[in-house]
Image 1: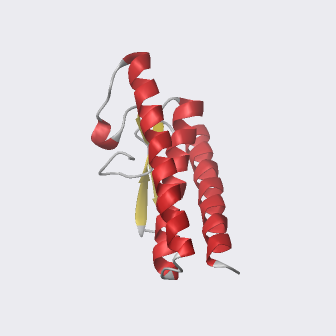
Image 2: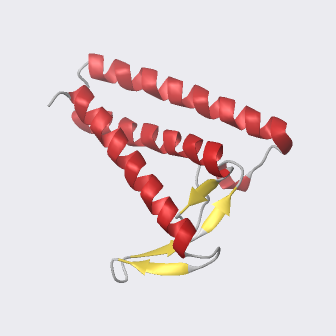
Image 3: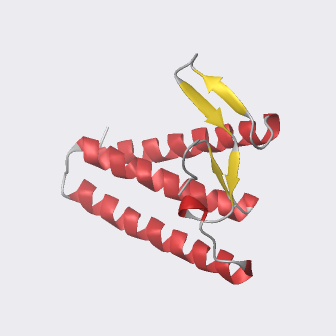
Length: 128
């Protein structure tokens, strides 16, 4: 399988898994609830972040539009960078790492568009 196909496959798998997990959390947990995952390996803490990194917000409809435009620009930039890495036949690990970042950015755009906020499974920091 080519590096480009691996990148696309990873992006799709992460987005699908991310959306399934977020749907499950949203429909089975209440805000503030915690659940252990994989025994005592980790803790899933349900919070919602209606802004951007570290809970920062730009208020109102204008803020939502600006954040959405920024997210779209970030996805385009990451996509361009990923494409250039594939064309240069960069190290597969780097291509897959950038693919994971791209998937996260797309997931955040989906969350913003459909839910109006970013879901986060991180206890110590809101999603970015």
